[in-house]
Length: 163
Image 1: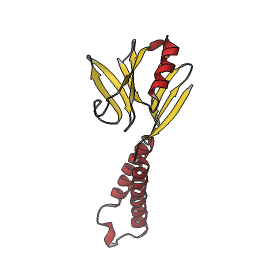
Image 2: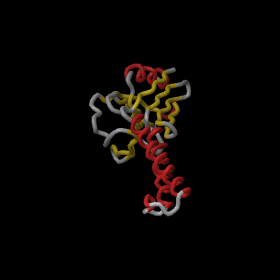
Image 3: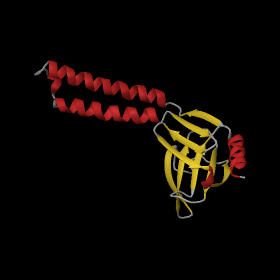
Image 4: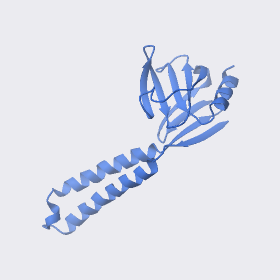
């Protein structure tokens, strides 16, 4: 079994900033409800609560993307950012290769959907880590690509399970 967590640089600070903005707008909304008619309530009061909701949702998304988790078990492979996860069973994995030059090849970092050979490819990657490409036998995606700090170990585990 292999399990690792790859932090996404800077996302914890971004989450704190977004949470701070959400709390600010909630505070402004409560203040305006308690003190009607003051000069601070130029925008309608509902605006503060809508902004609280927007920044609350953005905070939740940022918190979900603060680290990539990779788990190789006896059943298969699971990769994901927070609630956004993808699982593949060993029966559906045809092979694994190391991509030594990922860079922005997949259109950025995070969760991506890209195309290769006319079929969609699901990507879970982060900054500064090599990626492993899983070639799949069937399903919605032709490949699942994910970052890992220990690609040789992960590929070795994959080859033992599918070989």
